[in-house]
Length: 71
Ligand SMILES: [Cu+2]
Image (cartoon, rainbow, N blue to C red; front, side):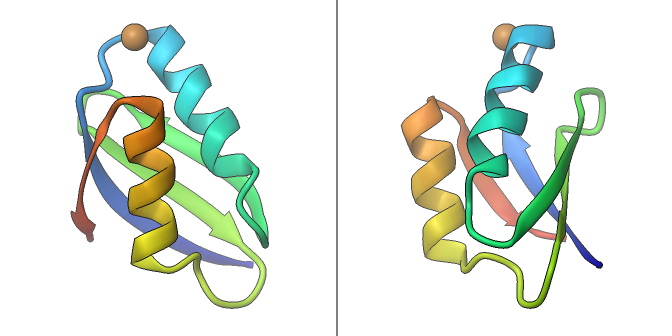
């Protein structure tokens, strides 16, 4: 299992956490998604390569948040 951490702006409550965890959890290869609200980061555990920037950005945009960058 590999881990990728990304910066995501705009998450403010437990509802945001649930939305992001569920949304990113549906991307291919993603096994686990952990949001750190205070740090405004999301750590994705995945099999094989991480989802591409375009996929992450599209998924996060769709949920109404802002994809910052890969950390
Ligand atoms: Cu919220």
